[in-house]
Length: 143
Image 1 (cartoon, helix red, strand yellow):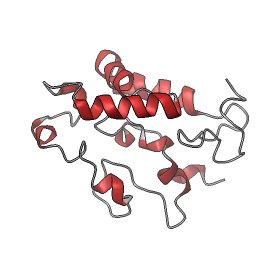
Image 2 (spheres, rainbow, N blue to C red):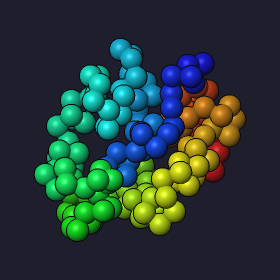
Image 3 (cartoon, rainbow, N blue to C red):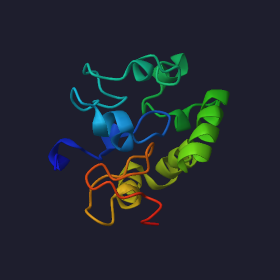
């Protein structure tokens, strides 16, 4: 198990509310773990580096680096992302951001650990595949 390399901490929450710690690229990248959206390190997926939300001009002026603190929240890009993730992966980025704002990032992190931890082996369940990265159990089988 390579659990020690995988982290689920506040630094892995992207400005859009996606938890990069449960992303397929972070969990399975063969050339090394993707460092997450907030990282300045090399190794991010191309689409993450080019992300229009992460590179939004308005985000540069927001201390928290979170879309929820933008005066335009939720903007059309966030709404589109939320719709796609809600339908495909049963995760709402808008709800994630609202939970962070209401409860704080530490409480959000705790709820994410509970939500995405495999009940069979305590590995991390990938949001995109719905499977535990360590034992392969489907999230649907664990709900």
